[in-house]
View (cartoon, rainbow, N blue to C red):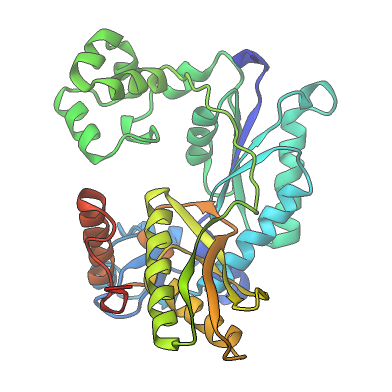
Amino acid sequence: MLLSKDRHIAHFDLDAFFVSVETLRNPRLCGKPLLVGGGSDRGVVAACSYEARRFGIHSAMPMKLARRLCPEAIIIKSDFEAYSKYSRLVTEIIKDSVPVFEKASIDEFYIDLTGMDRFFGCLQFTDQLKRKINKESGLPISWGLASNKLVSKVATNEVKPNGQLEIPFGNEKNFLAPLSIIKIPGIGRETGYKLLKMGVETVKLLSEIPLEMLENLMGKAGTDLWRKANGIDEAPVIPYHEQKSISTESTFQTDTIDTQFLHNQLVRMTEEIAFQLRQQNKLTGCVTVKLRYSNFETFTKQMTIPYTNADHILLKTATALFNKLYERRLLVRLLGIRFTHLIPGNYQISLFDDTQEMIRLYQAIDSVKKRFGEKTIIRAVGVGT
């Protein structure tokens, strides 16, 4: 196992990604307070420019409140097809440049440069990769370089936008010490509030709390907090493979030509694996529908889509594929659906042009399914199938 001093992990993060794509397509928007998201008062802010952030606006904020804080803000409707396209472009640039990388989200990457220092120099290579991404995609990107993923990510966040920072081995604790505890990835609102109530405001103070005390206060999470506060992170860079998939299929007891039955089955299966996607904190960028006829001939159709894990988008795509695929009107033996091009990603407001009500509905449905089983709530057409 490699020692921390031998590891070199770079974290790359595209700056204000959605906004950057919009300003790249329309340079006249540069330097202006820009809001990306649903334009109605019921919508939410998917992303905002740094100029808009000076007014206190942030992603996930209700659009109505954002417009009140900055009446002169320019509102652009989200174009997730364009954002997915640029995400794939940057992924390909990185894939062609490095042996091992992890796609942590639609706009965030970890790159394992361990061993590169012996041949080229990690700092020089990282800087050149940034220039290459900027030149070939036109998008600004920031990076942090350190001995582990945690510190490299925090470093990146400290120098955005369009910055770069190396934290040499041995300087991890000194770098983290003066920062607010909320700068540490994984410290959510509840944990942060509990620590602030204890008077723990900086990472330095958190690192000085004895491990046993943190374990008594927070259980296993206390151990994780202590390690993060001390700059310790042994998590590996997980190699990215586009071909990872999640799928389901059903072979019918009796071959059928009943299109309503087939449609109901498709809805049931799509909902089932879309829920699994959300539980695994993943998004899909490609949907495939599979049909096998009674004569055992098998056909598939697929469609590349903007990254999502939302039922209503995936159902629309799956239905369109099925309608194109089922043209022969022969008896069907098997129906299947598969999601590929998977990347990490929660059901984040920043990834969907939804109203607040739609987002809360998904969160509520998933909460019930997780507690009582995924068949607790299904669309009416899926009942009895």
